Image (cartoon, rainbow over all chains, first blue to last red):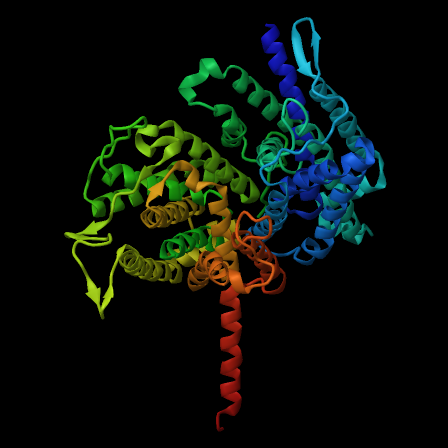
Length: 296
Length: 327
């Protein structure tokens, strides 16, 4: 029972990080109808900036700079690249984000090389035990920070004028524009927030029990795609639910791997995708996504 | 390279003509390549990683491998036909990851993580390897790569003509109608679900053949050879070439496959490039930068790709000819 609880808590923590990344996808998608495949690269970028600056300016300043830098790159790529091609074919937009992803990751992979960079999280690799349930301090802080951020974000959607504008733009772009909502600004803010969230998630994804920053951080971030999709690409609640489901499922399958050998070794890596496919067979628009209705 | 052209044509049918975003092309390439090895390869009981092979004639193996890829496409179509747009894109992305896992698990067929060697292709006693029989054309010795090159050429031309014929005919019109508006298509009597499934079938068969040629060219395949990067490359090919154009897909495939080789050839004479491992920018990284940037620039400035550029050049020259023509 306690092992199960351990797996569950660790899964929730991983899931809350997936949810942070998935929320980034969702708000970018709501604002500009692009699924941002360069998000993994943003994570890598945030982590890299923090890891390089941490020795000279200290951890918290480095994190702040990392978040700002990532948000800035996201903002610039939206302004310079994606705001020009709003009406392009979906495949073109997708491959464009993939092109950006390729450039950033090639560069960062080259810079990181085969070394494992440490982000120098001050909480280290300690483990907290409560009645037999153990979780690393890093993961515990991750849950708290992620839920605070997600709470703030949900409040922003509900109460700030940007949140209202975003929801209006996602609902009906043309009508929103006619009501005087500046879509360019809504889009820009969405990309900035998504970039910042990616950097925050990167801080915790590179902490214990992970050894540090490696180029494969991008692959880990890929698991947030199924999270965003199975929750429903245009639903923020869905991103949260999807992230938690994927995180818990992955953690449980990884934990009970020994008794699940018939699925093949290392099945936990593909669990997010398997779960997503099962959900999509039943609900093609995800759990909370809006169904497309056709009126003739 | 011709293998890439065939694969790109296949993906273009699905993405460019039917409007179904697919990131799962690598999976179908894997199905084609690995099942060819399984069907035509010999069993290998020696060593720590035994694998089985059925030892069928290579031509039969190739045809069956294409058939199996088509079957894989059909099996995915219940999911594929229900999903739209980006959901389909991510679902097919998932297919690549799950596929690699499945292939790694059935190591009797795929050779597992270590992969397996690809059996040489042969046709009516003529093998496509370095000798046997010796072949000289105009005093140039035809070795494995020359022979495979021509095999690929013949197959690619065949696939090109077939795709042209299909897309210019009734099925092509139906698929474009599905892309532009599903409702309008179905009102006009196009069975949307069935056409989407057929597009998936055809595209995955093209990918399967492409996978066989890819496997023949590299000589040894492992499930990891068919990672998500392969799907990305194919998408880049069709976007660079121009969505929906068969010829454009071939041009895009030529561009993307040739780029690393060309940069590798001239690496010494391009300033700023250095040998791999010396810490500078190596040519394979330069190629990645180049085609990442190429994809972005093409979409921003020439959204119709190489095919669109060719078309507008043709228009310009026709107009000029019309202006200069005596009246």
